[in-house]
Each structure stands twice: as structure tokens, then as C-alpha cells.
Length: 206
Image (tube, rainbow, N blue to C red; front, side, top):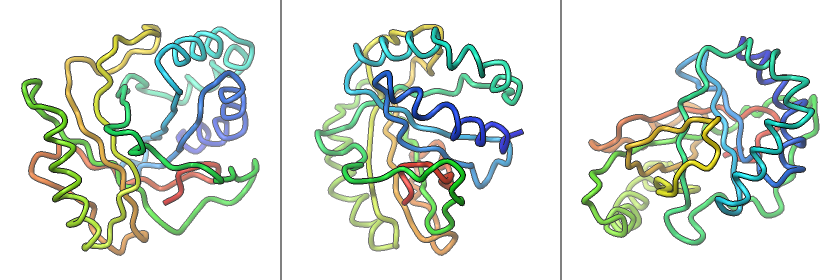
């Protein structure tokens, strides 16, 4: 039922969340898992996150569509709470215009989300510096363009009704490449790499 969820999401659940202070950054089909829908939602800070989530999930739009949406889902708890690793390492969305409802899906580039795990004792700054010094140049030489990178947000989840993966320390890199022309950037420490196809209304399109 992934296609039913995507149609509902892109039609009803984008502008309704953004009106409350969220940014719906990206919606994707997982190219390797036909039953997985991946999406990215951003907030200016944790306070606005808590407020926007309370208003949305307690509001009329979700109340009207939640039964239909939930009927398409087997599991909705695989959620990472992240923040940009550095100022400017988030997605650059200035000037990006969202496609209208009913627009055809994108067929150009894939977006790769590579998730790395690290021990709590590791200094986060060292991870970021290594990534910028070594991984970015290597990935870009192979045809992958790095578009954003994040790490675990250590603040407590301020909307417990929406569970997040806890007790993990991750670094997540997003990159893009022409569809099926190159391999995703994988390092020995990567615990997962998602190969994502943007939906029609995704702001992140590769």
C-alpha cells in the first residue's frame, strides 16, 4: 500500500504540516524495499518541533486522515532525531519550489542516505572533520555529490507520542547521483545505506 500512502501524503499532509512550522524536506520510495516509504521533516529548533507536532497530531487534518494513513503502515517507529553536524551542513532549499499536487514523479537522480554508527566516547567534531577531509572528496570523485550531513540530536524527544530510536549515536550523510549509474558511498563503518527515489513533491530531488 505504499503508493496509496504516497498519494495521500503528497496530497493532504505536506502543506498542512508546513502551516504549523514544519518543513517537509523530502519524500522517497526506497528503491531496494518496495514496502518502505522514507520521509524527512525539519524544524527550526526543538521547541518549535514539539509545538508543531502537538498541533498537527492533535489537529483536524490528521484526525481526518489518520485511519486511512495508518491502514497503509506496518511500522512507523523507525525514526531518527537528527541535527546538522555544522551550520550549513543541512539541506539547502532556498529557492526550491515544490511541485504541484498531481505532478509526475522525478526520474533523474537517486538520493543515498548512508547511516554510520559511532561510540559515545568518540568526539563528534573528529567524525565531522574526517568526513569533510576524506569521505566527501572520495565520494565526489566517484560521482556522488554530498548534499547534507547530520548527527544524532542529543536533546530528549519532546513529543513522546512519536517514538524515536534511542540509545544510538549516528552520523547520516545524504548524497545524490544519476539514477543507477554509480554505486552508493559505503564505508566499513556504515550500518545502512538507503537508495531513495524522490516522489513528485519532494523538495530534495537530487
